[in-house]
Each structure stands twice: as C-alpha cells, then as structure tokens.
Image 1 (cartoon, rainbow, N blue to C red):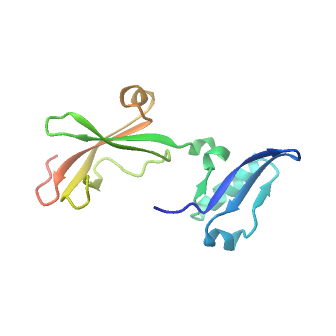
Image 2: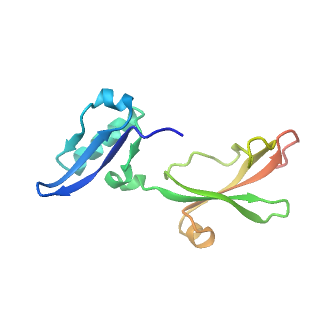
Image 3: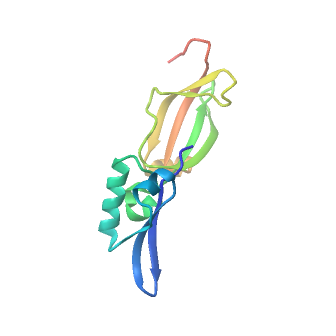
Length: 149
C-alpha cells in the first residue's frame, strides 16, 4: 500500500483558525521540509491540487476538498447461481479504479482464480440496497479455465 506524502487539515486555536499541511514522507520533506500554513481554504486547496497533480498523496484531502470525500465500497462475488455474496468492504476515493471487464485476482491470490468485474453500481440506491456508496460485482473464474461472459 502506498504511503501518504502529506497530512492536511484545519486547526483552531487562540490565534484563530488556520489550514496546515505537513510532509510525512522523505520525498515530500525534500519539497516542503517544514509544515506549511495557509491563509485560508482557497490557498490550501490550491496547494492540495497542485501537489496532487505532481503525484503527491494526502491524508485529510477531503477536509479541504469535499469532492475527495472517501466513500464506502462493498464488494460482492456473483455465484454460480447468480446470488451475491459479500466478499469485502473498504473506504476509498470517489474516483473509480476498476472498470467493467477488468480482471482482479480471486479471493486468495494463490487459489488460481480470477474475478471479472461485471457490474459497478453507484448512487443513492446503492446505499439502500447494499449499504455502501459504491458496489463492485465480479464473477469468479478459474484462472486456468476459459472465461465465460
């Protein structure tokens, strides 16, 4: 798993409110060796977006940019009988990493299975039906056998 390069957030104190960013990785510390304080949210947002464009990752990005709010992902496997079985869940970015047709490793990477994503659901109805913000539904296949679509 990749490490976050920065932590960014909002602080309130006697001196007033301020936005700050602190480097966490050696790469980020080369760029900004000392924590950065911003006059306001627009300045913090510009730093965030500019840094992300350069490939830096942020913990707390959703505090500065609500569009980066983490969403709850739920993963289901479509069984041979068409029934859905919950196979995991996590919190992740709104931007989709997987697309329909992508192949993921199966349950246990050593089991010789792969999963082809057949459905991805998003939107308010997903929370009601699946209990998350996004649902990915792959169908598992033997990695050595033919894929059936």
